[in-house]
Length: 270
Image 1 (tube, rainbow, N blue to C red):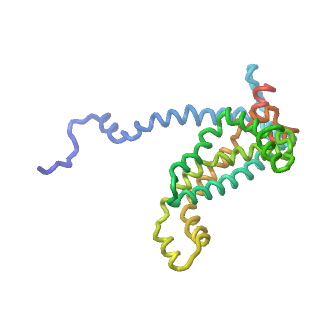
Image 2: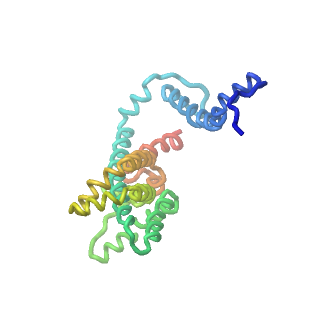
Image 3: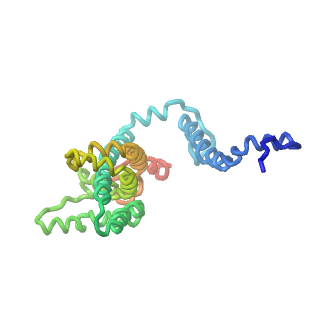
């Protein structure tokens, strides 16, 4: 029996309007969440940045760009910005390179490959926890495991947590160690590269290195870019590691990232 495409009769204007904008109603929960938890806090923060406000006292005073001028001229703040950029520029490239290298190896058909993938991913789950940061501090203290191992080889390890030269390296190494999430994305991207391209390149005499830079990297460029953006965002939000390992910002403030400085201003200086 042939279906009729004629519009339903007897429908009220409200019902017709509801049919037309029905999809909008499905977006209402997301719109409410975006407005309440994103748009409004962003607008309030932007407004407060132009005022002299104290949460413990009533009233605000409009100061214009004074807060921004202070932020970019105060030595302590500019130093924290430099340290944060240095931290991001060290950890992000190393983490992505290491994650891509491990993913490339685990993409081959090797024995117990699923076990290796699980083991390499575990640090990403545990890396942000307080327990791992405490363990990291125990590993790198003056009489910790790292210096003990170096002592077996006749190497006098430095005081990692008290030397400003090595303090930033300790938290950078902690972030690089958490490469599992980026590795999983790289592994999924590598699975999507057509095998025909590698077969054709092999017939043409291309080496594995040539295939990697001429086939693999161009094919997974979107995932590389995605990982780059997300890892940079995470690096600039890093807090747990520096705060727990170096509660006071490290030796001479050498690991005082912007997030840690904001915390100190807000909850220590009020």
